[in-house]
Image (tube, rainbow, N blue to C red):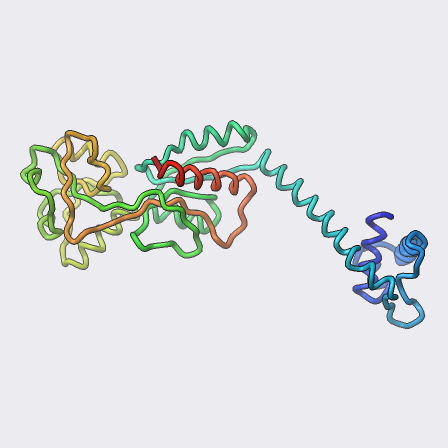
Amino acid sequence: MELRQLEYFVAVAEEANFTRAAERIRVAQPAVSAQIQRLEREVGQSLLDRSRRAVRLTAAGEAALPYARAALAAVADIHVAVDELTQLVRGTVTIGTVTTHSVDIPSLLADFHAEHPSVEITLSTDSSDALIDKVRTGQLDTAIVSVGPDERPDGLDVEVVTDEAIAAAVSPTDELASRKTIRLKDLADRRLIALPVGAGIRRQFDAACARAGVTPRIAFEASTPLADLAERGLGVAIVPGSVSRNRDGLRALAIVPELRGRLVLAWRSDGPMSPAARVLVGRARRLLRVGGGA
């Protein structure tokens, strides 16, 4: 029994006509008839009733058709599995990230590369807004981005890396250093050090200022190193609360009302993903669950 015999049999059964079946599978009609006759001799029963204008299945044909379809589907699955393995062995993955976070990306990529050395890995940095757009459009397979506390970008699935308060950080010599909290309106006349427009934390801060009727004075706008600039007394840095931990040269003030931001790993929820990208995202999610992003 040959696969092409099953393919021809299924085509004739579905088309109810030898000529249309031959056109569908792009072979000559006599070849279709010959192969199905060989199949019938092998199973010892007529599978098709040819006595009428429209070809119909016999009882034996009705019994055989589901198994013929299942056999062809199994072969198709084999091709898919082999294609996926080929892509995993020699595919590509593209990952983007904001500049400041606690995810150990070097270890993640090194471990992935050790298991799949022929997969080409591309890593880039950008603002959260730009990274989210690139994941949505398929330019990136996955990205680490900053979003609001209750935000989940449309069309994306996410794994939370961190969820923390956004703070105002100053040097120990700053007049604000002795305070524990600060209101947004008290920051209106201060020189602020902030991430560029498009960054998740910047978006949260600007939105809060707009609600409070405050126009922030951004003196320094940069992706990094915000904390270093604040530590040297150049202004008040708007940063994740964790940035000031274990830094003697910074004091963190809680912003009132509280602002929070989340760092997440994001990937498309409704688009195709290559086998290599699926493996990398799965590995990254396990890393985050075990280590909490640290």
